[in-house]
Image (cartoon, rainbow, N blue to C red; front, side):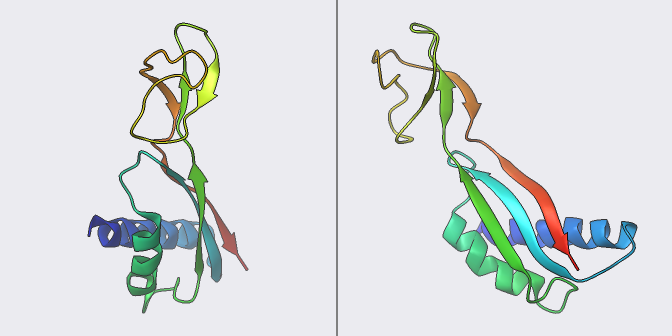
Length: 114
């Protein structure tokens, strides 16, 4: 389960950020997680408890915003959201698409510190 190593990295980044900004208690960590990131949301949330134990982040919430797959169709030149990862075709014109605009994210966006 690579989600545990990802959770440990998030803890490390958050602790460094808090220390650089004068300390405080972290209430929540906000993360963007793309459908194509290769990370399972539920596994990451489960790993968060273990990764944050005995750290300044213990008891904090990991808030995950799921980011859908968004592509640009070369035929109809429109930006479209795909319903599933297994069919990379424009939902309007049925043209195969390869220009992925979003959906690969694994980004720590903010910390809620009190």
